[in-house]
Length: 258
Image 1 (cartoon, rainbow, N blue to C red):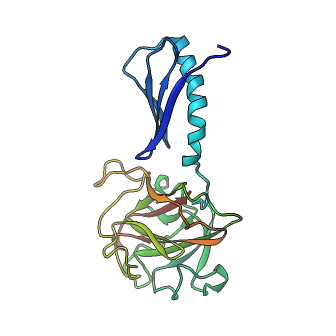
Image 2: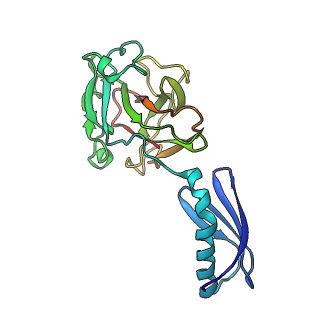
Image 3: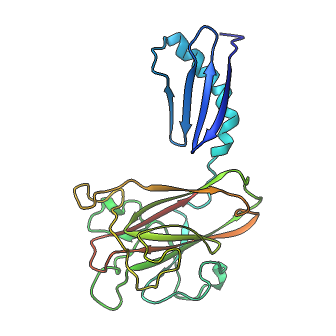
């Protein structure tokens, strides 16, 4: 297969790398590649020899496009975070303050955060919030979480920013004080009160598969092109997790920014 030649072109559309590859003596094949899958959509039968040739052509054609989806980890859910229990409102400016300026109401713990009535659901939670549930005044429906990270250089403005959330029941997120996205938060993008509850039910990925609603996979939010949001320096991802009530059997907040 030395000296094999091919023609083709590629584009990026609606989150997919789309390629049209034409090999000598072979039918053209349209190939779409998303962040999580790679599939040849051709509706034809290919011989093993053809598949090998297409594989080589794909490697040459797709690599220049991969940078559009380069996923640079910015915040990992198992990093060490700062968190504030929603028994009272946090200090003003909590979404952008330096870590050193946070008051004594902020704890330090490894993510994710939450509690549940079964071990499986909290398998990815390293900070358990066992005092969220209950009927006392010290129980709470909100958890404030933040993670600062420092970039030595600016991130390519054309790359897309993603926030993955595995959650129960709601959340709202900001980057450097600017709203990113939310789920099940009344009044979003405004910041909810510390006494707020999630506006709907949502089960985490490791929750009950027979409940209502059933367990749902982590959601990956495409936050659009980075633009000027990730210049060199220190940035703050801030999130409020919301539970539907203090009598709920679980609350899960597992966040990754990339």
